[in-house]
Image (cartoon, rainbow over the protein chains, first blue to last red):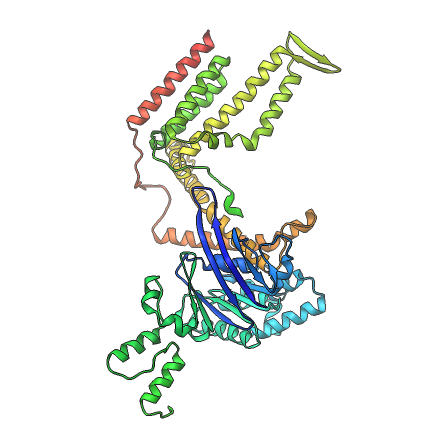
Length: 286
Length: 266
């Protein structure tokens, strides 16, 4: 299900004193199975961008085409669009509302008009994916759970719709390190099933680790797009936009300056580990 | 979608009208409302119209915004006008058909009633357009202070109003976010019959209430952490002062009042 944006533009409060352009002629193409990381400082248009991809916001100029469906076209079947693209908002646990975890996860599939049996199967599958034990959690109220568990329920609610393309807006915000790893590995597993992922993140480390390609947003424009190597090699440009490079990249740069012979393009912990090991004589650590 | 709703129609500015002490503005508004009811003839309305036009000009509020306040209640204005025409019983019969009788006095009275409503709306919206809701509650608190004597919790009421006003935009934003989140999960808020639509509101209202309570809880905690304990001995950062502009405003209203009273006597 390729996603394509053509000259996508969005202006809030057009023709009023409060007019502001949140998206300015954004163009991109996403292939099936890609993992896209979206970075940009606060107010750079990331949230506006992802809300266009499943038709929550209508473009004021240009268009978005998902799997041949033109989202700027009023006659496009929005239900089909929302089945194709799942959107997990920031702090998704604030959208929980049902009496039980099971009912809440079933909300999405129910809206798709599936039959009872299918819905029940979807709920079980989704709960397994986010590692919530069915027997233990299905009949609990979502409001009794911990923050991390709530978020997993909320994400399961979107996964149960089995979207081909999953968009997550800062899925790890406000979680402890354990919760973060949990959500990230969940996203990674979903990606391994061959699905397209778009993840907005403020963590350069996470983006470097998972993304095949990175979109850099700045003042409503898609300023850069490319592989982590292509993007993170332009440290100066990123810093000028209020962004950063992964912590290990900074460390590698620091080490190179002090005479250690490290290869270029070190953006993840794994790459750093390999580089350091080969520098120390290629021995595997015990 | 919800961002288009304007609540508390305050229009920020720095005109003389904006800078007036909100207490004085509020009291002058009471006088103005009394005048609207005291006016006897068209000459009186002309005086009030001049007063409003002058104030609006000084405040630099576009007439478009002023008249917008009449729009939501236009129906009531028209209804009042029509009902008064048909039900007023006077002496000089102008027109009669079946049981409908229109008198000359009826038309006059109906026009007056409609004008009265319009003048009330435009005048009060001129106040809210030039005074921030916070300033208004502040003024109200100061003006109602004497009620403390009969143990009416003036400060607490004003604080509640302030907090309520403060959270309107926050809750609107929250509503917008939840609507979007549930829409992304395939919820449909716009179609179906009344019962289906009411049911569709559950996924919106439950999270909204939960978050409102959470916010209230957090705010209470934050206020307590800053030693808030009600109004006793509390001083204010922004003291309200009656200045030259206010005296000028009082003078203008006094002259208007004089003219209206004169018109009434003539």
